[in-house]
Length: 289
Image (tube, rainbow, N blue to C red; front, side, top):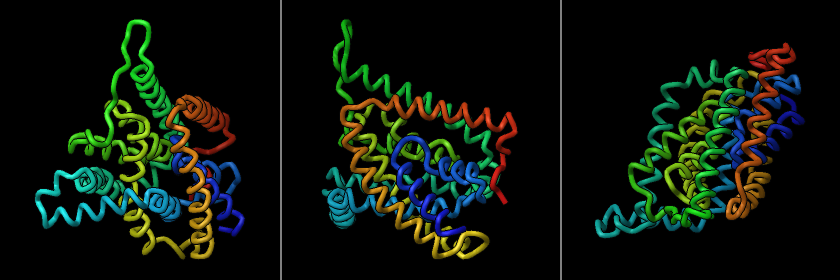
């Protein structure tokens, strides 16, 4: 991997990680379209550490309160009913599905799951799911001629059951094209949460999963094959800087905007990808070793 490739891939990671369009799919497609070798699941996992560092800094006050309350609740049972302490436990509970499936499906994640036909399918299918979830949320928020405005849930209403369902949605993002934020936000909207609450829990839930995945891959992949220490670290730094700007914009965007532009983009990209593979312009395994 060249320094230019690492710069472009780091930029793509930072731009797409927090948007519901799948950063892993875009890293995969950028390499395929440019004729570069597929950066691989390990490179993706490691550069995501950069974007998660942006999450940690952006939500540092929330995270500080959650960690403090969670540790204090270990010794004081009364504090376990505190919202921040409960959120700490719910992030742990929600992280279980992706941890189990990530280890179980490791070989598939690094191989068959990176087939461009599967990526195209997940882009389209999850785009439709996001569109449905977005329309349901909009209907509740605006009401209508014969429908009253419906109050949606916020994070104070989050239960263990909902936390696990969020976790299952996050685990779906192990397949390129699904999108971690897209799947968890869609799941949250379908469970009746507000856009802001769904996005906030999605970002908090991603922190332990991404950091654990990146640390796991560090010992096996960096420095081997075409992924070297220098370019990978450089890409991670680029992803952090760009990712922080994107998350700040996205949290403002979702407060009063629809997800439909992302839905349309996902579906068009998926259809285009299918067409390119069918026409022989791209091989399903383009760029892979």
